[in-house]
Amino acid sequence: MLKIWIAGSAGQMGQALNDTLDPLEMEVFNTDLQELDITRTDEVLNFATLNRPDVIINCAAVTDIQICEDEPEKAYRINALGARNLSIAARKVGAKMVQLSTDDVFDGQRGVAYTEFDEARPQTVYGKSKKAGEEYVKEFTEKHFIVRSNWVYGKGKNFVNKILELADERESLAVASDQFASPTSAKDLARLILFLIQTNEYGTYHATCKGVCNRYEFAKEILRLAGKDMKMESVPTRMSELSSSRPAFAALDNFILRIIDVYEMPSWQESLVEYMEERAE
Ligand SMILES: NC(=O)c1ccc[n+]([C@@H]2O[C@H](COP(=O)([O-])OP(=O)(O)OC[C@H]3O[C@@H](n4cnc5c(N)ncnc54)[C@H](OP(=O)(O)O)[C@@H]3O)[C@@H](O)[C@H]2O)c1
Image (cartoon, rainbow, N blue to C red; front, side, top):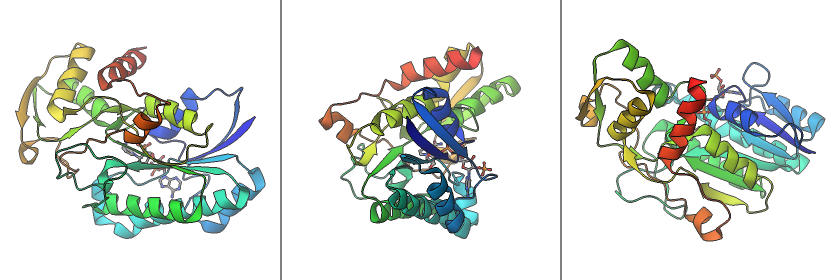
């Protein structure tokens, strides 16, 4: 039975992995901040030595862009050094290492989807700290999967849940139509990760659902599927009521997945339908 350690297990991705994996096939060690702070090097090494996981999946992070800007030490401590600690632990026990990462490692200025071979040039503290995390993982482990995604939604705070919440409170909303990416359900990303860890296809992956849309189009589809009515205005980011400093064009090309031809992500629309159906249950 494969032994998996999910660090950051209470977050969106941690929960999605737990909801998706088969407990008859995998033994899971779940830890979040309360059980084990990934910035505590010795505790991380002790946990790995004691439990000897075959795979470590790092879902722990500070993902709030504003917190990262306001508290860069915290961002680097968790997003970079935390990833370093887990990868040192992975090397020590011979485990495979999965590092979740983001489109924010790119500057979002190109207007064309980024492949894994494009140069990362992060503009935000969040993006820079995640890139530093990727570099530590590459430095300390050979058997790694770095999985970059964007606009992830699952159980927790995310754009889909925010739109649905606002639809119950507001009559109208201004949403940016100049931010582009591929909405990706945490569950679909979890399925891909659970597939990858059973292979030896190590390296960096872009993993988003197929298709690209802007925030306004995404919000409209969320409301349509929920059967909710709210007047929506398509505006530039600076006038958006849900503004964000994320890269303007954050689309990722799943280039490696495509050329090794072993796994295909669903379209963002299909994925959203599944999420909305499960949410309604
Ligand atoms: N969400 C997205 O759109 C998106 C897109 C691309 C990539 N990603 C990446 O995917 C990964 C998971 O994202 P997510 O959306 O699941 O994030 P999330 O919901 O914010 O979950 C992160 C979890 O990590 C925990 N954590 C924070 N500091 C920790 C520490 N020092 N030690 C242990 N646990 C700690 C958090 O606890 P607290 O809540 O108590 O802080 C939270 O439970 C991250 O690496 C993120 O960069 C996310």
